[in-house]
Length: 454
Image (cartoon, rainbow, N blue to C red; front, side, top):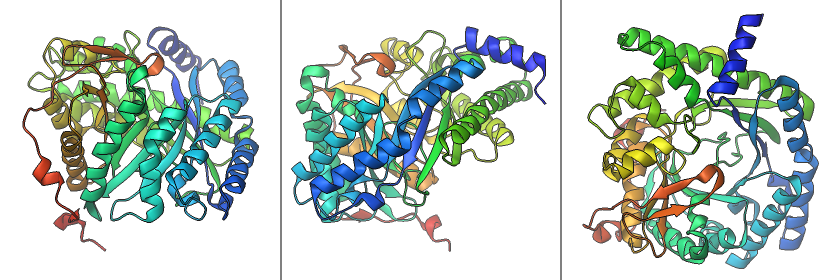
């Protein structure tokens, strides 16, 4: 039973601490939309997405109004398009045509992002995979709402270094194609290792082939709520600190569970998972960096930061799994730079470097996220950064990702404005030493020894 004190506490978290449901994401299988003709495939895609997600925005608004819970984003994820288009796409332009259809459909639905312009190439690439990857710069330059992801490795298969090398050039070309908008195309493109099938968060969301025909996944946030709770306990011991985070995560997840069940019922689509991720926004007070400071580091990047983040991530997951039987996706703490005002301040203060961020990704969700680097950063260096982050995911049996933005015309110390949820980012320095000889090698890095379990 929910008592009046819990209702009042939830209301306070919403009003004072930026508690929100970050996204309701409907996953839709498009496997049955494939045909031998690109035009017919596009027509089938539009018809199916409109049929299943036509009421997504209105239902989200109804739930927010009925329960007083802000629901920030309503989104759609679809089957990786390299699979859907494999029977009809013979050129990169054919795939870009599907991307434009997805964008037009997303605009008609009124959603902010549609994910799934994706390829899963953790062990090798088909011709369709190569064509889709090659079309990414054109697709992201010509669309506003389409998000793209490429999975280049897994713990079970190792890393496809041919795909890693290819993605360095694709990111550079995407930055060039959208240079007039701060190279924003790269903000909608992520390279993953161990990508989950049920992630509701962009840009890495897609509807995995292990999923049903349609599903509702909910992503819950709330870093401001956790910070407020920690501010009340002062210099308490670690047991009290952990219990506070865990109990707060439990309460946040229960809010998401309520929204997920209602969305599922009203849309007539099965409930999938709750993703409890402390996903920050550029708003003051809605920052994972501020939580780390509350735990006890002067700035993110200071000695002790990785330990504090490990503690935070673990307790968030423990609280979440007690609140819902279906916690999945990328649950934990995100550390994007541009979307977190505290992270931006830490970079500007000189406390946080790419190398320290990489170390932090060993113990948190996702990886190097929304990081702006100089526009003259080479494709080989970007591929080396992707390889490093993917290796962390592969060896540690976790999801890692790189969403890096080589901003055309910008140098270290400059800043780039993306607007909205994407925020703004200071341009960070990258190593002046290269790895071209490493990334030029062909083939795969084998799976680690602990992957051989059956």
